Image 1 (cartoon, rainbow, N blue to C red):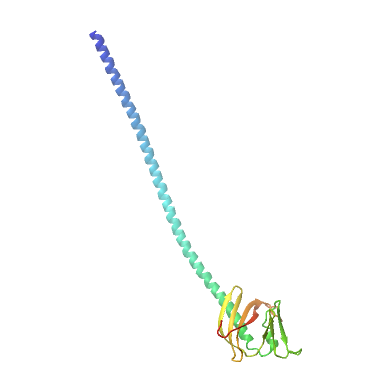
Image 2: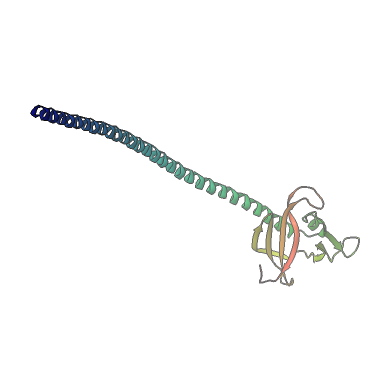
Length: 207
């Protein structure tokens, strides 16, 4: 009987040892799995860090490029605005020069050459010989031409393709003249330049 007990005890101890070894192996396998997972996570973290640093570097580069582009765009806008201002000033000066020449003429025939060719524009005289009183017709409204009546420029504005020039007039003229200037051929020649499209009467205090 004692022998059987010893055998049982030995078997139990053997089973315990086997279980302990198996448990140790399982723990070792789990530790290896955890180690591999840890290594994999470390590699992924390093990869994410590298990718983040690369994207951050790209973002900084893009920000720098955007800043450079903004500076370049601002300079171009200034240059374009400068060119536009230069063009507008030249056009404005040409339109003013046309009116300054117009106001110096002494005959109605000469004055007619400053009027733009367009529908609804015409001229009239008191007789067939061209004697005055005489004038122009703009949009079915008569405008009497009076030599030496236009004085100095007092106001102007630019709207789209038109330039509005308002001039003081002589004391015997009750209203000031506003010349509406456009680029167009003339009534006697086809050169396209700044010409008088219409002359409006405005109150002396208005612009």
